Image (tube, rainbow, N blue to C red):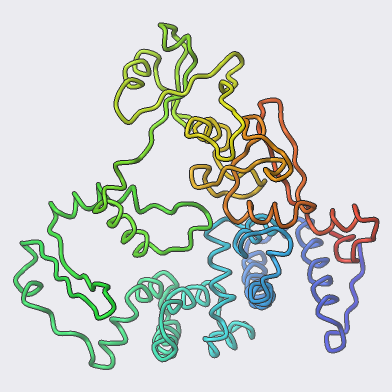
Length: 414
């Protein structure tokens, strides 16, 4: 058993973090006591300590985020770093980043959280509620939501109020808007009111009855989904983009690709598939592959896409189809941007003589494509037996050791 002795008043932040990590490791190895009552008390005490550690973690993440440190190590965003290096799920990473960015606006929440008087759950809920408010409404919202905490409301109930916090503030201050005539008449008919602004924009508000709302959801719902893990738009912003796409006819350009081998198209029984892996029976594949808007992609022996390359600067549409079957996401390991949103990348660089041949191309998101060409020494490139390239950004420890240096003590102990 490792002994931990720390003078809390004199220890550095790094020494405190190392001591906390050592204690956590020892706790994780120990078998819980047999007494349920004792475990209940221990769980509550440990959870309170964990909440205060989360407060410290939010401070560290805030400094990393503000200094854009993660970009130096090949991560396109702080959330990407939280997912890849700290092993967080997307929802958890988003929650902690919101806390890190909003805690300076929540003075009382931060104080209570750091001293153990407010749980992480409440702090995260309040931070999420005020993220889109100005500073004046932020202070009002903090006051209202902390009041709910003091009254014993659960974090879920506080979150529900947080979603309509602007309305709550208006109700408290007596500034809520008077319902218009269309709202007062009973929601039987759909209506949309549109007002043009001085800068050419347009304000839109309205109401859809149940039937029209079903058409809205069925048309815009699929188009308003996040474009990838790094799509930071909220639902309102994505819905506006989806509506614009429908009005401009852009949604009609959606591509559907059926992947099959030549034998299937000529009467074989081997099933085809869509780019997301959905299987398609051979008979159905032969039928839909001839439909308008559906493109067949032929595979050669061993399910290797047929060679479509030729030496020109830009990849053809057919080559892009092949690449999208090989790369469901960006070629950089750990990057979750969908391949359909990525750019075609010359693996060895066009300016260095890399031809635009299918076996010399990969798909990279825009951020990593620029990162690769700006810092080619930061990427390790490998190719598997199926012809797919994998770009890997080594962790800081790997780069330090590869350069012949010694990693810092905290990396040696990791």
